[in-house]
Image (cartoon, rainbow, N blue to C red):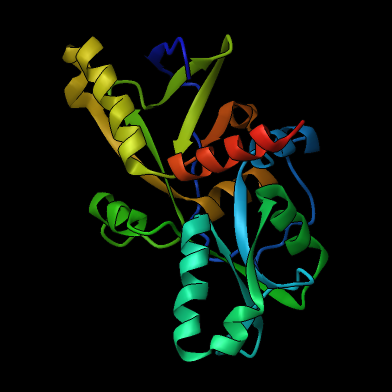
Length: 235
């Protein structure tokens, strides 16, 4: 986000319904063109615990469905395997962390009903979300609005105005702090919001609002380092 230009925009008046699991959602059609959904979701890596053949580790829900966890954090997925090894070392030795783009999870959720997918939030971010909204449920994304305009905080990236949704509250806080330093007269109008990732995906799938094209999901620092490491490995 070099050459960051901060402003407030009232162009997006989206209402995100709270939806608590991807597996139960119906991704039969995208309201936005597939290219826009791909652009928003494909840059985001997520991580699953799989066996050597790439088959996800699943658990049975109370309803008897097979559920696979989709971790936002690679280190959290690895910690899960490490903790599993305490009680079941033989199983843990057969497991690995497998990365895949978020868009692929959405596609798989549409294509199959045998396995349900549930996001596993980054460690500490649910607690941060509940400080914003006490009864929050879901996988948190953080954004900011100005009460004076009702608009989301937008920034300029590569000469394009976008609305950032952050996986880490501290990254949004840093952006808001910069804005308040530049615009102290508007500091009291700023309100941090927390929106479930599940609801954002559902909105992309079912809303025809043109303003949705402005959304970008901002990688966590950990995921950004992971993506950069892959880029360095590419000849």
